[in-house]
Length: 379
Image (cartoon, rainbow, N blue to C red; front, side, top):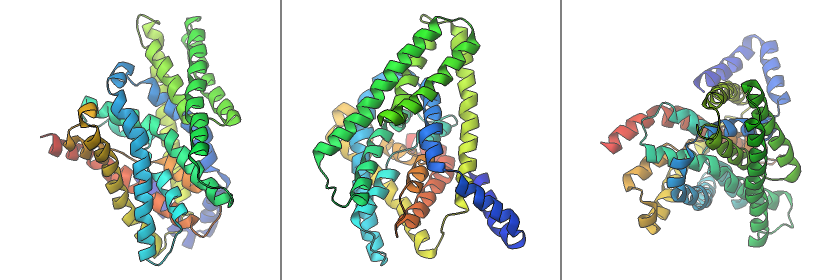
């Protein structure tokens, strides 16, 4: 992420001396549809790779807190952060409509599974918290995208009004449909893997599985992230089980998907760096972005603490651990991709700039200081 930022700054300064070079980079960033590339293609592969290595037994033990934080927590965070943004922008004289603030809250509230997975590889987070935060990051995209689509439809279709019935129908289509599609295709792919002994064929089946999920999810309008996650959990829990499959096959499959994960992660941050050169970093936008960083952390904390207070006996999460979960909830490429997918409006550039500020702070500062926070709070 740091290299991507440095490259973007270098490109902007180089434009003053080598305008042709700067122009080529700007053209390249405009030609690449970052939102479509990430949301429709890369995200499926990245989430499948993350879900493939999740310990399904540990996830099952912490399933209740994962479900609560990834659903109720995301809704609380989105509405609270959107409300704070509405009053902050009004105080600064920008007067952003409340519905646009809710759209901003919906795209910023879910944690990014890709960023979280990369962070947890080097963190000292306790096993229980690691399972909760990794599981939450895999599942919370569904509710976040449902909120984002709902609020965006109110903006783009003026006669569209908010109704719990339409939201429930959209939720069922996106979330339940995604789980169902991923589960069915994952089971079919696993049975095909069991029928062959050649590990190259097994790997090709897994890659084909994700490609089919991306295509069919777009056609059926169901959640690509949740379909990829459910299929990854199913395939991973069975292929890495020595009693269910050849352990060597599972080992090879895991290594190949770790390589794919690393390559796509690198490509993702390069693409983010390319998009940085076209962001409008004006003074007021930077102020909004800076304030958004802290207001989102506050909303994230409350979205964990409030369910914890109401369901403390069931969730069984110590109050100190909520601070770790807050600081470890990173935002990444998904927030940027959703922001870039917004239609043209007077507030689009503001949301994009603020989203980049949140992501940069989240990855660099939260990511690099998480172990210090864990050591301080655990000790």
